[in-house]
Image 1 (cartoon, one colour):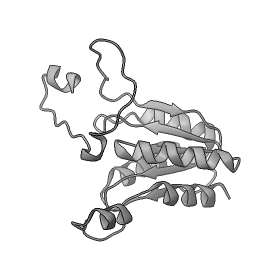
Image 2: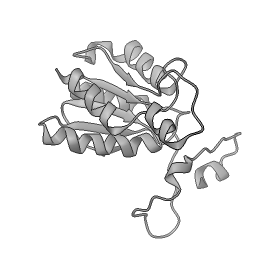
Image 3: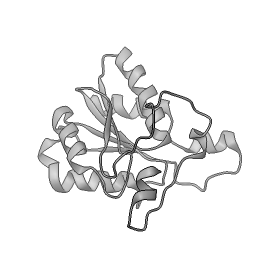
Length: 167
């Protein structure tokens, strides 16, 4: 948010309501996260999982489960969508050869489809297998919390997709 406040450009800051009650370590004192710079949350050699916001939490949980099965997932936290850190995504895909993008939006016209298109346009030769998206199911988001959780991406769906992708 500090980066957004200091920006001279029109900026939209969106946070996920389900992250508000989470706790974790933060640096001492004020700090800023630069726009357009992704963060590698977990190193891995078998599959790149790209996510943002709440989906990073699910991706990290999935990576732990995958590691127990011998699949090492690299987790790329986008942190900002525009600008998009294409270099971090392409570097990671170049390392793993496989791309799985997790996005809470429907599959069409989503961040996931943009990331996949970017890799297809600029790094197709890096891929060992076609990219995979784990999106919200193509239905309206229900008002019921349990149903909302069911239609959105979750740890189990990410694990299943990554296992298929890694063959």
